[in-house]
Image 1 (cartoon, rainbow, N blue to C red):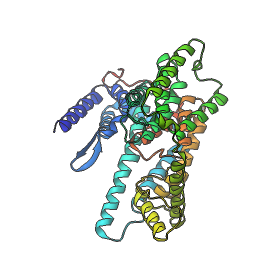
Image 2: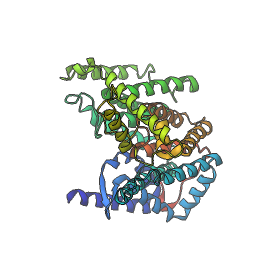
Image 3: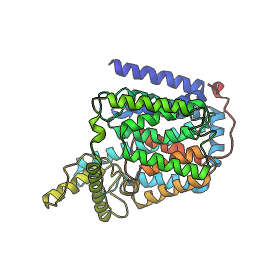
Image 4: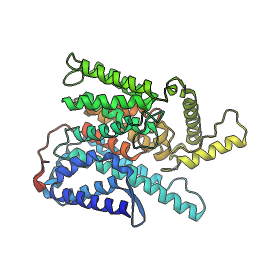
Length: 415
C-alpha cells in the first residue's frame, strides 16, 4: 500500500512538472531510465514508473503549441529513409503479435495479450521516451544519462564484498553491463570533468560485473573511435593532469578486489559454460528461423519456442543438450529481430542503424554509443529490455538529427 501511494505521488508530481515546465521534465525523464524497475498495474494492465512518466511527458508536450511546433520541425528534419524505416519496423512488430498463434482459444488470447504487452513496453513506449528526451531543449546534454549510469554503478560497487559479480539494482550482472557500456562511451566523447569522472566510475563497475561481452564491446568501440575520431573530445582520458587520479581509482579498485572474500571468482573460468549456453541458444534460434523464415515466431514468444526446441532435443537424446530453459532472447540481435519481427522487421532494424551511422557521422558520442550496443548485442540482449530499448531509440534520434532547434517557451522551458 505504501509502495503504491509513493508511486502515485511521484507520478503525480512528475505530471505536474511536465505540464508546467516541459523541458525540465523531459530532461529529468532521461535520468529516470532505471525507474522501469518500479512496477505497477494500471486498471489491471502491467506498467512501470518510467512508462507512466513517458506517457505523461508525451501528453504534456501535446498540450503546448510551441512543443508541437518544435516536434513538427524535428520530425521534418529527420531523413526520409529513417522515418520510413521507423514506420516499417512498427508495422512489422505489430503484425508479429498475430503470427504463429496457438490453436487453443485461451492460449491464443494469452499469447496476443503478451505480444501486445511487449509491443507497448519494448517498442512504442521506448520510442516515445527517445523522442521526448531527444526533442527537449537540452537534447545535446548527456548529463542526465551519465548521472543515472553513475548512480547505479556506485550502488553496484558496494556489492563487491558479498557478490562474486556486482549487479547493482538489476537481476543479473550483464543487465548492469549492458546499461553502462554505451554510457561509458558517451562519457568519454562528451566534454567536461564530470563526464570523464562518470566514465571512470562506470568502467570500474563494468570490471566488477566481469562481463566479457561488455569488455570486448567497450574496448572495440573505443579503439574504433580513436581511429575514426582521433581522441575523445575534448581531451584524452589519460591526460597528464588526470593520470594520477585514474591511477588512484584503479589502485583502490584492485585493493578492494584483493580484500574481497570472493577473490577466487577471478580465477574461475565461467566462459566455457556461458559460451555453451549461447551456442545452444543460437542453434535453437537457427532451427526456429528455418521453420519460420518469413515472419518469425511472433513478438515476445522466444522463451516458449526455445523451450519447445530444447525439450525436443532431450526427447531425441541429442548429446550435449544443456538443461537451460529460461531465456527471453537468443542473445544476438540478428537472430532476435528476425524471430520477433520477421525478416521485414530485421531489415528495417538494419536500415535504421545504417541511416543513423551515416547521418550521425558528426556526432561521435552518440554514434559510438550505438556501435557499442550493437557489438555487445552480438552476444547478449541488446534491445528487448525496457531501459536498453529506450536508450537505443534515443541514440537513433540523436544520430539522425543535425540542425539546431531553439528551446520551447512552454512553462518556462529551462531547468
